[in-house]
Length: 540
Image (cartoon, rainbow, N blue to C red):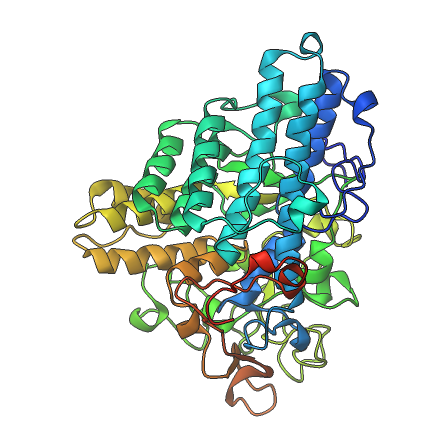
C-alpha cells in the first residue's frame, strides 16, 4: 500500500541515547562527536527530527487503556497492576521512569548541542523553532513523569554520573510550574501550522493543547480552561465530519481535527493491526494486546441519546443496532444471536461471530492469549493492512480538537458555579458530529461533570488516555475492585439459545489506590542506586 509521506523523521540510532543510557543518563556514552556534528542548520534539523521518536507510540499508549475499566490485555500475566499485584520492582514502573528520562536527557543534549552551531550557519528563526520542539518533548516527558510519580528529579542540562547518583526529587508543583512556563513560552515561538514536507511537526496548537492536558491532569482548572480556550480561539481546528475516518488512512492529512500525531511511514512501521484486529481478518498467530470490555460497550448510548437502560427503543436481543456510531468505529461488534446485527469481517460476507462453539478463528477463550471478552479493537486498524498486518503505517493521534473541547468543558465546569453556554457548546459540538442530540438543558454542575466524563469515555476510548482520567477523578479504585472478573459480551448460546454472559476469571480487578494522588512508587532500581530519591511515595 502506498502512503503519502509528509514529515519524514530521520532516526539517527543512538544519537541522543547512550549505549547504557539508564533513565537519568548515569552512564553517558554518546555516539556522536560534538566537535564534528553540530556544523549547520541541516544537522540541527536532523537532530531535532530524531527527538520525535520520543512521542507516544501507538502500541504503547493505546495499551494504557488496559489499566482501566474499558479494556484488558488478554495475556493474564500482563495485568498485574489492575490485579493489585505490584510493588516498586514492577517492570512497567521502571519503563515509565526510564523511557521518559531518556527523552528528557535527549532533549537536554540537543539544547546544549545546538548552541555549538555557528550563528551564521543557522537562521535565528530555525534555531528558536528547533529549540522549542526539544523543549516540548522535555515538557511532555516531565508531564508523564510527575503524573506517575509526583515529586521527581528536575534537570535541564546534561548531568554527570556523579550528579545522577546524588540528585534529589523536586516538588511536584515546581515541576508543573516549569512545564507551564515552558509550554507558554514555546507556544509563542512555534508556528501555527506547517506546509508541505514539514506537516506533522510540533506547532503552537500542540504546545497549548498539551498545556491544557498537563494543567487538567494536575487539577489546575483555570489554567487548563485558559489553554484550551486559546486553542479554540486560534480558529484553526475543527472536528472531522467522519469520526471513523479519523483513525483510518483516508483520514490522514485531510483533517483539521488532528493537532499532533506520531507519524509512521513505509520505512517506519508498526504492527498494530496484527495485535489488535480479529484473527478472522488477518490470520495472525500472535497474542492480542487489547480486549475492550463490556463496560465500554454498554457505555455507548443509543442513537436517540439515552443510556441503553433508559431508551424504550433499545432491544437487548439486538444490542448493537441503532447505537452511538462511535461504538462501531471503535470495536468489532460480535454476533449476539442469529439475525442480530454484527459487523462483517473485511473482505468477506462472514459476520464476526466469536461465541463459544462458533468454531471461528475468533472463538473466545480458546487459549489464555486470544480473545477473552468477545470485543476486539477496530479503531486504528485498516483493511489495507490485511495482507501485511505487521507492516502498518497508520499515524497515531496524540492531541485532537475533540479532546481540547472536552478538556475546556471539564475545566470550565469545575471553575463555574453552574454550566454556562460555552460548556454546553463544547460538549454538544462533539456529540452532534456523530449524530447524537445535544445535552439536556439546565444540568447542575454535578450532572454536567458526569456527562463530560461519559463523553470523554466514549469519544476517546481506546486511545490510551482514560488511565489518566480515572485516576485524577479518583474513581479508578471504584471501577476496578473486589477481585471482580473481567466482564465480556452477552450472547445467546448457539446450541440452547440460553442468555449467557462471558467473564474472564483469570484476570480480576483489584486496582491499588495507595495514596490520594494515585501516585506509583519510585522504581526499586532507582532508589537502590540513589537513596536521595527516598522517602518512597505514600503507601508503597
